[in-house]
Image (cartoon, rainbow, N blue to C red; front, side, top):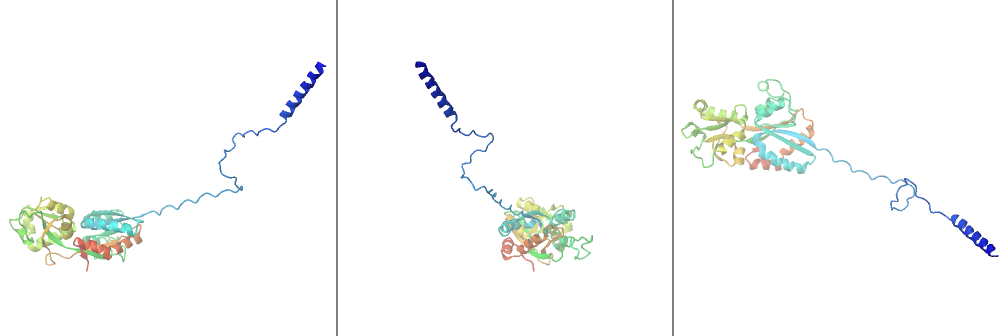
Length: 299
């Protein structure tokens, strides 16, 4: 009897074990299955990627070759133009007009040329007098050339005017020991030669060793500012910018008008933008900047 109860208990235990093994199992995680993102289940549709913003328009670069006497004014106007045309980058190259003309002729990239005299522009303009454009150069874009500004040639002295020079006529006296001039291949030097020739002083001053030369008007201005010369013949605009004392101004009886021509060049990669900047230089806002330092609108 005892053995029968043991058999019954053993059978019940086996039945319960079998039933437990037949119950539902937890699903095993799949190897490599994506982790849950935490986002609500979608409808099965693929979400389109966000559109990328369009890249900023690439700036147009304009290479402006301008006479050294325009350095301060054009740098100021360049800041103004950045507000007007932020997509245009202006790169200035300031030097003597003769040097700039040579650089253009030798292949330098230039979109707009502003000379301190007609001669250097004429040497690049096929429409100019062949007697000046002897090589028949054809760099100026037809219809773009304008007379932009007028300057004045003046006699400037160092601070305090140590030698008491008061006029161009004083250059022929013992008051002068050393006079600073521009080289003969730059406009300010050519105007200076005209003045000294008209006064009859040039040959004597050269023979007496009383002339020192600079490669552009800024170098001449520096010599006067540092008092390494008793006086210098420069432009009114450079005298103003350097804070020099002007003791005389050359009239048309001593030298020709100082006109600054400007033109877009045929080799420009952005002629429309170059013309737009040239047009901007003729606006009242720009003329005010020019006139503040001594330029005037060309007549």
